[in-house]
Length: 459
Image (tube, rainbow, N blue to C red; front, side, top):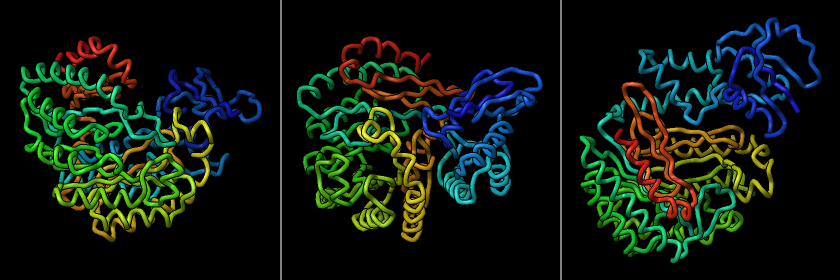
């Protein structure tokens, strides 16, 4: 056990998060202390004091920790001292405050110790967003609607998804409809507009075509919007849930963007992670979708899945481009509590880091060569190598919703089990989370309380 004493602080959160990039859970403890001349304290083995002078310079303390822990462990995380899930945000803040791209790059290097490769990624994304994404407008909001059901539960999944059973869905949808109607009624009395609508999960296409059609109609009527006028996205993520009837319902409603998310095109991997479909099923889903002429088909790829190497990820990326994906998100595997993989192999995320780095580099090379550009990035806890998830698109085919949720300057109305709404207060530059309950059963049982809390969006 390593004990990391941080002097002059009252909350160890930021320093504990940084230490997590060097140690596994349970192998360290970050301890806040208040002691004058703390540098003279006698310490036991594997105990260290940081910020002995008691300064209030958080970035300076984190740099001190970074260099010491890197020396102890031999690990040098590419993202330096940036530990939050939104690594673009410091760069964007510097840019909006008047720094040019070179000055932003220098700050990422000197203040946050970000590696050359990750600074180049940030620079590319920052340049794309500033040239192609309009500034957030406090009058433009988004809607997220969660469908917490899947045909099977993947081994790495830690979301509150349930197996898609007819009885469960039949119990859930009436209460979701109530929340949509009540929230829409409140929204229509405001002076706000809807910029984008996102149907996520789970797997929304676990619903029947008739249920999807009714859901789209409920959203449009309740919020007085037309999906065809907005950026509207449906995660049709699992190819074993996609058929012509569902695609027709989605396209007829005016939805112009879908996701088909294989994670891998290797059949052995799909079986290993608990998928009930093959790579041929994925190709068939793309063939069906092509006839409906969606503007954007997004696909997710995961680097670090058990049994895969960099060539497997490269093959998956190439196949998805060939099949017609024009927006691809490359995820680094995150092994979280609650997932089957975490319970079976708690230290999995600590191994194979260099191979995952090769996967990300090779995927980026292939995407660049195919004309894709990185347009947003985020991170999660327990990602292998403390790496990142990067969204790539062909120019102009970015997801506004994805950009907005990461920049945290827009109100997002969260509907359904597992949805995390966010209320943005422009005057205070403050974001307040308004989460719904994950478990759909508890969501159904507590729908009255959930609906009552929706007034917080309009307070």
